[in-house]
Image (cartoon, rainbow, N blue to C red; front, side, top):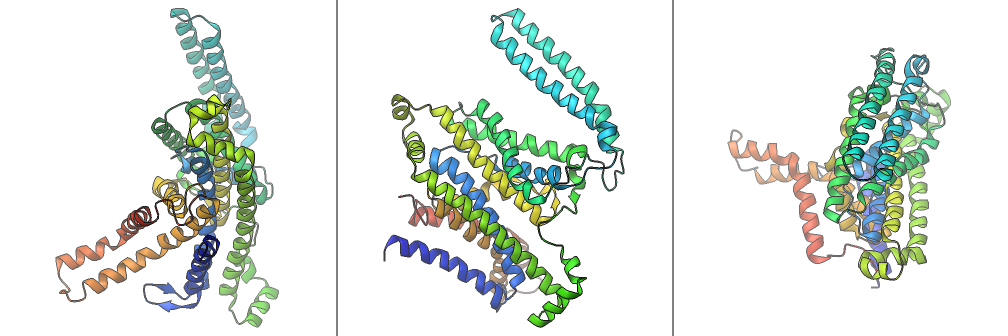
Length: 441
């Protein structure tokens, strides 16, 4: 059996698992629900896109980025800023002051950089930079704080934020990529010159800063109060259930209106996400096969030799860092659209850093198809392992007394089977297929 056939069968196996999830009922294994199967598929497609972005950075260039959740969160914020309608009166109350404050903040940073570059090293330069920073900070806060308070006082129970531009939500997906790319440019200009371990620390720290802003700046994203009711490219289920024509069609299909509306919406999302994934996968493959892609892998394998051949290593690293982060931003916008709400509190490193890295490593670092396979397969395992863990613990403890302390402890620990299983899968793959299920050629 050749490699192409093996890799095709791996994708077929994932498809079979999704079909079994939709058609087969087995206690603790498969739910027999197409609703569950499509839910897993949609998040698996989004995870595959995120894994593709990380694979560009790590598999193509060897950049160790652990700030994935920051770029994902920026993609989610883009949906709010792009598709939500503007909060009535927010711009007049404080929006203009906030824009002026942000301009003042950027000007302060720029002036500090200019002072550092133009003035000779010594006490004068240090004092000048301190004076610029202090004065700029005072002016920034004097302009920002009244504007923020004015916006957050507007109907705080339901709004309290500036809102968005009211554009079609599909436009928010590329905007999410652009927003993440802009943040990646700023991060890359300051951090890509660092050694790989320091780069990881820097990206993680900056991602936490981004998340802290989203959680605490209510005027921007409502913080932990969340933004709900986001516009969607597909109708809400309740609207379909109230449409007599759709109810009639659902009955002709043999479904009740509730089930049919849920399946219709989730299948629509699956088609949209598949199109985006295929487009990004095609672009990544073209980049991989191009002279640019060969150059990136040469830099990854030996930076010193590539630099000696006249390649600007830091500039190329910045390019790939921006591209990979932009893809993560697109995936973050898609996920927020799927959820119909922005919930900054759910962006945690376990879900958007560790898990995505497991997907890339298991699928095959440096291989775009491997990253996609890892995203689909690992997400399926992530969802199904918890009920399987409960079933396994129940079987193991079947002979124990009902009041056994050990039995109670094991049953309580079943929820942690996800972490155990992800670690076990990673160890098995690294032992028996260290380059991943679909390794780089």
